[in-house]
Image (tube, rainbow, N blue to C red; front, side, top):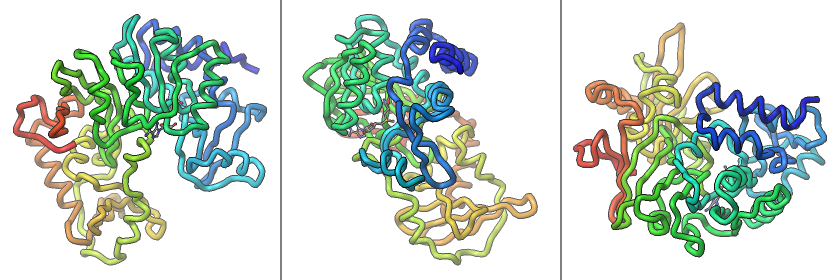
Length: 383
Ligand SMILES: C[S@@+](CC[C@H](N)C(=O)[O-])C[C@H]1O[C@@H](n2cnc3c(N)ncnc32)[C@H](O)[C@@H]1O
């Protein structure tokens, strides 16, 4: 069986080749910090259900040292893993995970830390990311908070067993952790719909806040520089990252929205736009699509297994499907969402097909907005 050390080297090599990791100090951290100490148990999917995996199961170590998200909690229920182990695969919504190592690597590199920096991590989870930060910066420089007391207790113990002793506390991360501030860096490993003012207040002028945005279409990684007056200005980054949301920032479940969908809508018509070109995170248009269709969620609907839906809480919906190689769409409700998407595509082309990294973000106590190319641009959207 491959040893943990070899497995870590293999994973680190893969992250480097994939372009996720290039800073020698982070390469060293990924080589040294034992991810397996933080994920002795997790869940893997089997169809629509979750199977509980234990460290004695075959394939456990290989899964730990692969570029995979490892779900460690379902429905905020600390007993779910035991229940699935006892009674077999179960349904549930992931509420904690050790994120994909490639996304963690990207986020850590985009944090642009240097020795001596004080860092706050929001979303301790398993503690693995806090261990990487602590390996790089030292225990005295790192604080990490999570809203879930059981997770904090486990993470603190596992960090200590590896020799890492960052401050690890139960807190609502939206309030930051003023006791240990001000920070040079704040990094959030869950996603947010808006940037909590507390993070800017607790970051030194010139310091950075790195987080993912929680948007149903066009989520993204942003890096915000904090100014002397406590406002923030930053960029959407070219490298992308998607995380589960901060608890209070969860979006309306598309499943609930779908119940509002009426089976009949307009007669189907052809559309030049594919789902892939519009909704896939690798599509250049996706970020702009999210700006044009705020609070619209993509969703799948069991009654139409070959279709992708767009849904909004106002009851608007669009169903996209393919027949004989042609893209077709049918729509209903108060607004025609796919028509709006087609108009947005034309606007995006007129603007020169901007990719996500041409967008930026401004945060003040009065407003939080995204803009194209320049904070003073006339092309602005609320965050
Ligand atoms: C993707 S996990 C974090 C992964 C973690 N950094 C790791 O290395 O394992 C997201 C975490 O955010 C936490 N979380 C959700 N809402 C929160 C909040 N309001 N404040 C602090 N943590 C929160 C969840 O409990 C969960 O543990």
